[in-house]
Image 1 (cartoon, rainbow, N blue to C red):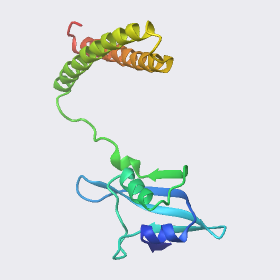
Image 2 (image 1 turned 120 degrees about the vertical axis):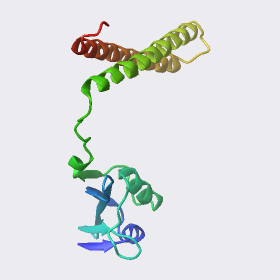
Image 3 (image 1 turned 60 degrees about the vertical axis):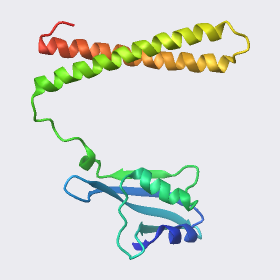
Length: 174
């Protein structure tokens, strides 16, 4: 597989048709991604490993880093296949601390988020009531407010259920 810098890949290909990002460790706790770009050149697929100006395999800090770099060069079509390998490297590490403290902290965090969600639902309900009675306000705006309110209500219900579940495990009252 050839190594090429992104500008050369962009100049070579009419368009990229597939990208394969591979996660790898770039330091003790850091993860980076290498990129292989499959382009169509004269009807045939050509795979190039993206490299730096000095020929080393280029490591991107995340998928967005690659997409920004490629997008600046105008080599990204409206849609393409993106494959990410090595996601096991970016999975969270297993928790090994005090589970009771962690869950108590989650209850506090979820409680704060639940209160904020309740405030947002109240605010959205008031806006919807005001907007619904005003013919100058487009229905699309009312629909958007309603969709936001519905989403926040679902989040609040989930947070409240999680608080009850964790408190049940911890033996604490709701």
